Amino acid sequence: MRHSMFPLLSLLFLISQWSTACASTLSSLRVRRRNPFPFDPGFPIDKVIVTALNISTYSWELGTATEALLELYSPELSVFGDSPFEAAKNLSTWSILPHALAYAAEKIVIGTGPNALSDGDGAVGDPASLGVGAVLLGKVEGYERFGAAAAAEYEFITQGAPRAWNGAISHRVEYVELWADFIYMAPPFLAYYAVETRNITLLREAVYQCQAYRQILQYNTTTADKNFEGLWEHILGPVKNDPGLWSTGNSWAAAGMARVLATVMKAPAFPSSDDTEAQEIAIWRKNAVKTLTDFIKEIVDGAIGAGPTAYDNKLTRNYYNNPDIFGETSGSSLMAATVYRLAVLVPDVFGNDKYIQWAEGIRTTFGGTFVNADGTILEHVDRDNGTVRPAVNPLAWTDTNPWMTGSPEGQSFVALLYASWRDCIYAAQCWNGLI
Image 1 (cartoon, rainbow, N blue to C red):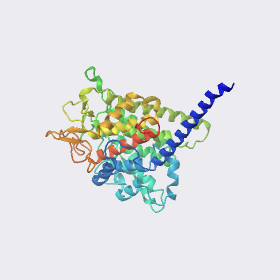
Image 2: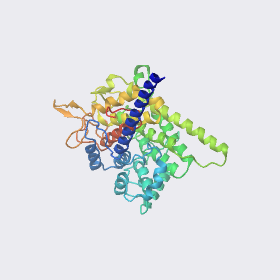
Image 3: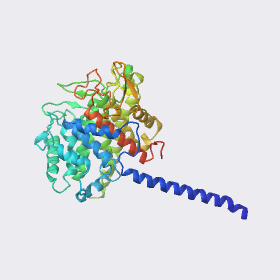
């Protein structure tokens, strides 16, 4: 009996040591969570976001930068946080505005109609990219006007904007034209506003817009190009029609649907008249989660399965179906960010090596170098100023020349990539080799 105690005591000692180590690790993680940049991604992420803020001017750039700030500095308020809508209730008690909301308050220019939050230059969706920031600002005393502006934006999008034959809301004000970009701008705002106003019908509309856009923009593959199955065309319409499989357009769509998915999953229960209606809403939400997950998976699988000709220096080419165009950082980073988010949201689907290792391949590439057209070797992320390169020309997506001076949206995408990777580590779905 005396001898049998030794293995037991040894086991208890090991358990004690393991528990102490775990407690220390958790304590370390809690401290790190107060720091927006606790892990080293291999490039100067702090400089990346500063450059994003300095060069963003157009409505969609400002909205994307606001979302990047939210996910970086106030992850509890982002829809990817644990309880974002509960956290948002406490905004009125904050003595200082969060970075994202201070930035949004400075950049939002309240107007009317499609320009309720910013001059959209003829776009329906672009000003809506500032919508979540406006809703959150409206909760803070002295900033209620932003909440009213968000309401006006919602009213125009749902009641004033033209629609396609299947009910898809046009990205343009004057004519029906569908852009994949729209999915990152409007549906996440509509979904968030739906939760804020307890409007289950509007939440259904936000999800339906993803379905309607997919119905029209998803690429019709043939036997010859099965590799591109699941990817979306960029634009369908009478003015800017672009049937190409634009890398950034596909990333806009996948990332936007990820935000809608997170909103559906994190939203508190909606009011119902009886148990039957409550059950119907619960069933709809469950089905919406599966539908959105499937739609995102189609795009991500299309990006991964597009084959080696769709990649250049480990980055996705500007157009997946044009092997003669350069690999670029914007679409690559946002797609990888989406994979990290989905690995946490639906780990049973995305929490495996196929997806996480693909995203890791993109992220680690940003810490390396590439050979420029003139033969010089450059860093993907400039160590001095955080400029990310080579990007796609943000205002001329078919430009065959790499954009080397910093894309506003592309800079924010890399910030989103970092935030999603960091949160994936915290969720124990990703590993940085240090914890």
